[in-house]
Length: 506
Image (cartoon, rainbow, N blue to C red; front, side, top):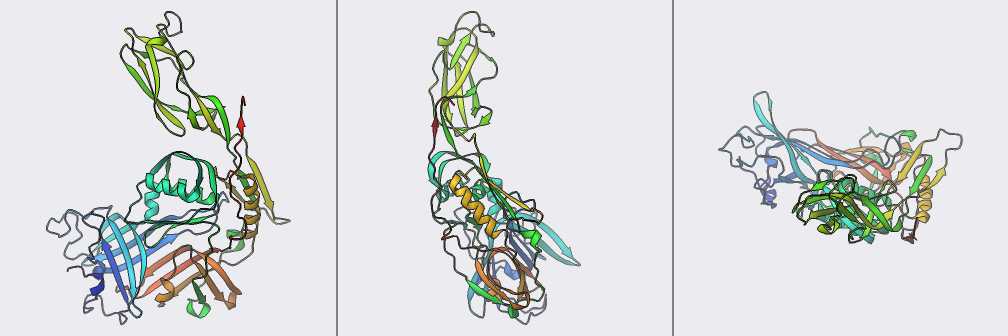
């Protein structure tokens, strides 16, 4: 059975699964089987008998109150009819052989045939392929993960940057982890400037989440695959108004103690420039044979704290290295026969090479690196306590990029307002209304009107789930989980830049 192209999609005569009675939903399921990062229009959806898409997060804040809950990798699962073995990884007569393997790019979309409106549902890469059976019918179950999986799996190392905007820092992370061009990116201008920024082999997910959270922005992987960043001052209009008569009756509303926090603690971590400090010292006295070299990585610390360095001093003989023909430092001084060079400098470490250019073996009796350290020895906390006589439920906000004391106080006041609000955050379900079900993406602003629950307000979409309900995939249930929506455009506008103090002899 050849895959039909998206524009020519049809369901056949319905003899295998039965006529649906409603042919309005036209699916496009394209897989880059040959791995060329291109989609040729071939459509696997004519074999699809079941699917689900789940993206987002359950709540805005973590259950333990230690920061914001982070988005999980979006997951698309679909079941394809496989009677002819097309998706059998071992069948060499399959037109897909030998390409039925994980890692292939996938895009999944639906068109509302009644309006010809196309909606992206998810893009990602295949993570798992498993054959299955139901009585005598053969199927294959395929699992796809969106770009969050890429961000979790790939580590970023970014050289020290000074006075960089949030969006520019996110862009550096995406570049360093080779974010796929096939997915793209849409990064709005950040509102904050970070005095000092770097990454040292940290996951792209952790790096970007902390950057975004530091300025109370919003980052998500869109249904079309793009990495999207929205700054806190971006004005977002409501995209849709949904009324009670358009929803299924089983509306979920979390209890206040599941979503509210009445005590907010914000920690700021200002950076200080510590000039001309010893950042690393060799902990032993290795022997280097004549004509040989020792290469190693030096990790920077100051007063037992890991630090980054803006400037490294070129090593100087007798000051930064010494060598002797006795391990204890006695005997002949061989320092002039040795050299010590920095071959590669990173933010928190440097690769160095110590060479013995003399004619006899010697011991390195001293090796150190000096430079200017970017240190954070002091932190400040701001507490907005609205608990009163109620049991305190604390939300702690602590990131290394929240470096402004002034902004820390603003953030505490703002979070104290929105997280303490006693408000319903409905979990709603919709069926049979494509123009509602598929119209919104994560982060979208939606107006929800449910008079029987006293709800008439704007929310942000925090999670989306689509689930087919019959083998033709014409019946689909969509579930939204909502989060607080607050217009931050007028809350604070000042940048987070602060003066960086230089301390001599600290």
